[in-house]
Length: 123
Image (tube, rainbow, N blue to C red):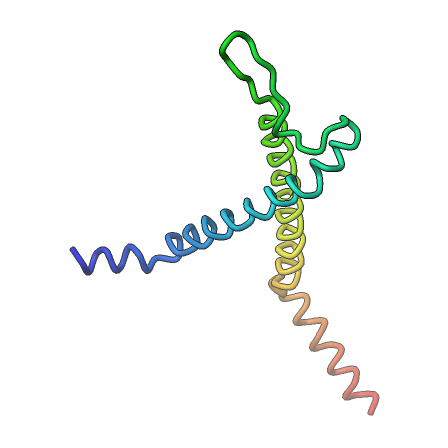
């Protein structure tokens, strides 16, 4: 059982997933800080309040914190946009690598041989 566990843990997918979760948690902290310390004050200038998380309304005994909800929406939009940019860059890099990995055809080899023979004959 220990051997199977070691094999399971050593798989690339499990390690990749663990790295993704850790980086995702760190990224979330960065985005939360960005929203709290930069974006909310900018929006606060427009709305007239600096901290949107304090926006609430009450109905009877219930308190609805719609400002916190707005913060969550802003966080989601930022995260989604950054993930979009990352995927876009990765796709661009992958396409470049695929172009580099094109398999030469027999015609390519024949052209190369022809060019080499022409170089030898012109000397």
